[in-house]
Length: 371
Image (cartoon, rainbow, N blue to C red):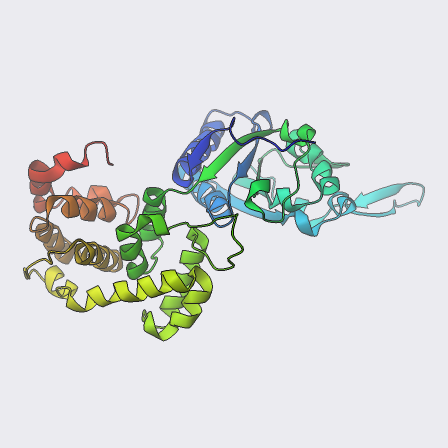
């Protein structure tokens, strides 16, 4: 059997994948189109690119867009035998027939105020015998006599065979039951997610300066520690545990992103020592902005992180918007874009600030084609 070709399926960033699929399912709910009429989806991509995170973002957007409770049931097919999906056989009441006890994964709330997502993660890591057992789930939405509820969406995800992860070639019969999308890393969509989820400001600042470091996964090497959106999220959690000091957890960080990258991150941290006081900026003072690009990226990241933590203090956030007028045009544009990522409604908040309107009139043209 030949490998499935990735060249003839769309390559879409994580952010666009989330927007397109959540839009599809929200429209399905609003227009009364049954989920069973929609194709099951297969998300392909390298390890750590954000496939699993995308499914959870899709769930949150469906919940926001429809007002329905959205529940994700995460199933790792690698851990299942084919018989596990059908359940355990037992005798019926009069002991004349065998019946199959429903597996816990199929015990879902079928009420109309709920949307279920059955997420078949790491499907390509499952042996072909188990993948074959997924045929009925992806097309007929049944396994044996067990039927998925009408309010259930089926999504699957897995690594490509070329990623040299644990991955088996997908049978063509299963592939033809799925709509395929190759998820690719995008710094812009990752940064929007990172800001809204409170990823450490030093990591966001460093990657704003070095966006090519977001993902350096290379399947041709045997390196164990490499950068991906997943490893940067873990690095952020590590930094938070150590109070934000890269020096204090340098060795552990090296085990996540590699020694070379951790060394560059530690060197990058030094620019923060010479930054203007972010608290002074939000208090309405006007310290001189730094001049070097690395320090400006660090300042923008620090201001965004502070604004996120104090987003309801509109007076002080307004002071920081006024300060944006003092920054070089490109960096003031980055700062305003980052502020808009704080939460989905924050652009409306910014529009209430006179200084934001002033900024739009003087420098807003920079955002054309970039928002």
